[in-house]
Image 1 (cartoon, rainbow, N blue to C red):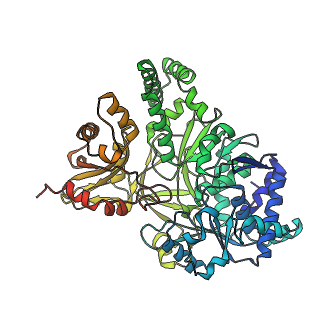
Image 2: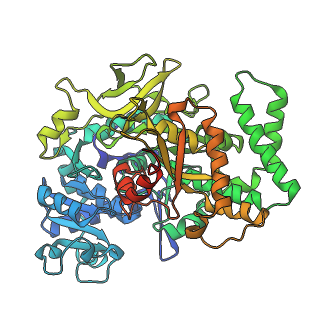
Image 3: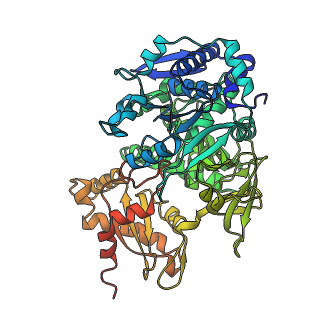
Amino acid sequence: MSFTKTFEIPTLQELKSYNERAIVSKYKGQWKAYSSSEVLEQIRHYAGMLQELGVQRGDLVVLIPEMGTAEWLFLDLAAQHIGIVVVLVHSTSSRQQFEYVLEETEPRLCFVRDYLGRERFFDQDDQRQNQVIEIYGNGENNLEELLAKSRPLASSTLEDIGMSIKAHDLSTIIYTSGTTGRPKGVMLSHHNIVSNLSATVPMLPLDNQSRVLSFLPYSHIFERTTIYSYLAVGASIYFPGKRSYIQQSYAEAKPHLFTSVPRIIEKLYQEALLYQSRQNWLGRKLIDWAVKSGVKYYNQKQFNLISWFKLLLTRMLIFRRFRKALGNNLVGIIVGAAHLKPELGKIFAAAGIKLREGYGMTEASPAIAVNRFAPGLNSFGTVGLPLPNVQVKIDDPDENGEGEILVKGPNVMQGYFKQEAETRKVLSSDGWLRTGDVGKFVRKRFLAITDRKKDIFKTSAGKYIAPQVLENIFRESELIDQLLIIGFQRPYLTALIYPEFSLLEEFAEAHNIHWTSPQYMALNIKIRERIQREIDLVNQQLPNHQRVRAFHLVHEEWSVEKGQLSNTLKIIRSKVMADFAKEIDAMYATDN
């Protein structure tokens, strides 16, 4: 790779992987394409606008995006190209969290998506509102008008500024969600990010003839650096821009690859299950046979000709509709941010789509390990092999080889912005980053994540419980959508469960159970009995102290907006437990 700073990637693309449709972004229902040359022109225009607004090298500028768009990408790269430090804040952040960011960073400008609104983050009389620029807005300070009034920087001027910026200079500050206290700003240099790109880009099955789809939040380091990697290989990047455009974008963009979080993959599979349940008897049997044949094939340790033939047959006869719904060109999906059910990886593989799970964190720019697309370098149920330029070790492993995951490499952050004490807690003097995740190596080289160190608890009976491990086991049931294991300083384990109501409705119809709404069906005796059978099946496989003795069905999905999920869709245990404190106590009420 011939670049050392993030903003040099578009120039590399123009020289080595020119693409007439480098960026394709949707706005008001229409796709707009930018060639590699036009991308550079846009970056020069945005850089000129920023300079005319008085922003200077070393200043901090806050971006509060949702999904990626061409505008967010141009703004991001232009700011970095003239030495501005880009501060990324999640659009789901509370006003209190945003206040923390403003206090620490004292930014010159804030850019926000128009429909989020200034009032979401500022009081009406807050003078800092004058620093806010809306993307697509109609007010005085909106991006389109400011661009119309400004002139692009000359190529030579932009190049001179870029050459004066060093690889180890601060590129960006990304604020974590701050779910357990004050948000922390992760400081990443150009070198941190580029070192990660240099390790991951060669693994992508893409070139400048490929199309990719981007719909995860741009404020996530996972999606942002993935977009940089797409630029580096010259693939056409399609930005739907709004959630409502995603479904149709599969068919319109016909992507070869996209990134996802497990929650989205689970939803895609649940839609397929719902489709299956609506088929006639023969249709249901065929789909069920296809899924089981696919899982069986990938569970085999040796090649079997009959199983391979069955797999080809299922792809031709059964999985065609599923592939067509995703654009019919999909080669792979890179999955990160949370645990992916191993069975899902096998089912998608049976459909001819490679799900490749990886592991990372903002503090590591972000990738630490990833399953590869090359044969023999993928292991279902793990997060893959550590990157070639990243060291990973298990600290103080137990008898099972499990311990806290420590990481060291050029991708590890410079520290937390203005929070030296917090930095010292996770970053040793010799460069090892404490991830807070518990894991182990499988077959000596594949990394598996087993839990969060802070989530492991002990029951009042003195038994240690790793809740995420159990949650993942119970969630193998297609009827369980979300689940939280409870048991800290309690005599036994219980669970809060948000079931897959769409499938339960199909069950109700088949068994003559009158269906009303999730709120009432969560209390229905026959529905509870159906979930109890699922719990009992899993309990049979577990030792006594790991069995769930009682459960409560919740009727509303946990969400980021309610503060119950992090921005990467991980369950925030403390918040969910607080929201359902009364229900949790009721599950233990009979225990004296």
